[in-house]
Image 1 (tube, helix red, strand yellow):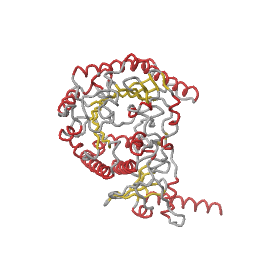
Image 2 (spheres, rainbow over the protein chains, first blue to last red):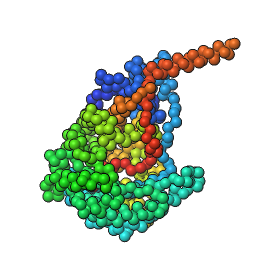
Image 3 (tube, rainbow over the protein chains, first blue to last red):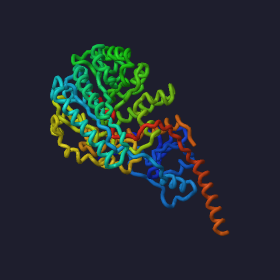
Image 4 (cartoon, rainbow over the protein chains, first blue to last red):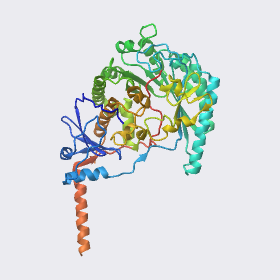
Length: 466
Length: 49
């Protein structure tokens, strides 16, 4: 459910929305209407005549409007028939052949970011210099054995492809994980070797502020060919005010030097991404995009602060994202637009349609280990010791039982047209804003629905219609 | 004879409905990349690093 009584009052109505049950349509000024079928995961162009007959809706609402029985014409019959049509759409992959682990290499950081979600200073309230590699390796083995066992069960009991291969992903976090790159090297190599023995593919990602990257560090990391995500909010005048060093000085110069060093060895690594955070103190996505798009990076991601619920800030972020998408599309159509990760993810889902049911793998295919080898269901919960579900090799799997249902059901999203794209949203984000992990804040749903409508429009503009 | 007429009428209605659909709803053609159906995989979480 959405927090009771809440409704966005600031919708600037740059996009109109209409809806008949699971058939939702959108229209921007001076452009043709387009639509999305939320069960079939299909985008379509629609006629102005059809648009004119659809019931008016709004972006704050998950309550489905619908044509009344008395509205009966060829076109309304067509709308009803189209809404009821059903095509074969893949469900979300339930083979559980994938497992994701996040690992806090250290709970210390050399920066002091103003919006830090790791306890405000990178420590989660518990400064730990280095994770114990000796304690971590047995954890990796247990989680990988568990994954291998699940895959075997699926192959044997559900007659899955005997070649079904597992996927084990590790994301190295902090603090600043590159304060201790040796741990990444040792843990990553162990996981890769173990995966090879078990027909499980391993992939690695490192989230870093980039300031500690040098050739010695890259020599340690390159054998893992990890994806490297830089946390950076934009050009120096923006980034330095939001992500300064502990002494208040600039961090951007070092981060960009780190990027240059990495780019010089780009072929030794996976994707290189930039990830910027926005809140009421910084809402100019266009400015950040302008800075990022000149860098030789693969993708960029723009995230709204999980603790920010100011309606005006939310609205401005949405509008700035829309403007950014417009500029990116004008610059290089689909290719440039899909450098923005949000658009790339959803274009991929529309090209390979499936009904998303879970925003992320929390409770199902995701675990997080802190620097004391405690286990959590989500990396953002590490600050909350009562959320711990295990220590070392001991995990209380019963603690995950309440999350075994799809998140779109647990979060009461069944009537929202965006449910199979959104997957119910981030539980930690919901809890931060409403106090309940299954109660969404209206700004979250409003933002998601608006940005999805942009995805549909650019998707339509990038593909042929028939 | 009656049955044939009914069938013809239904075919005609069906063709008309299809034409009507094509006039008012033009489906965007996906470009499948062969990627397997989505999983409960990692999501780009709020950055912690």
